[in-house]
Length: 84
Image (cartoon, rainbow, N blue to C red; front, side, top):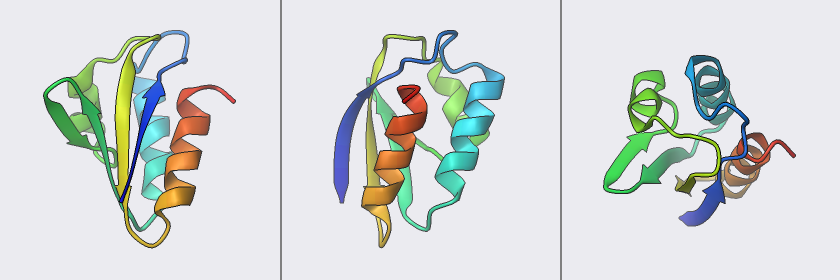
């Protein structure tokens, strides 16, 4: 299992379209992927779950991945959330 803190750098935060894109990125991987924000932990492959976080640009989250492609999953999600 890998845990990595990431600061959201998407200009408008995670609104509907950016959440849908994030879910698409996460869904490419077999690993179980979760996003933690405060006391909430949600499945990164769930649009509804991710929408409940209401993340704005500049907020920090912890992304956890567990599985055969966990490192690649974390790297791809970080790349998306930080606009790199």
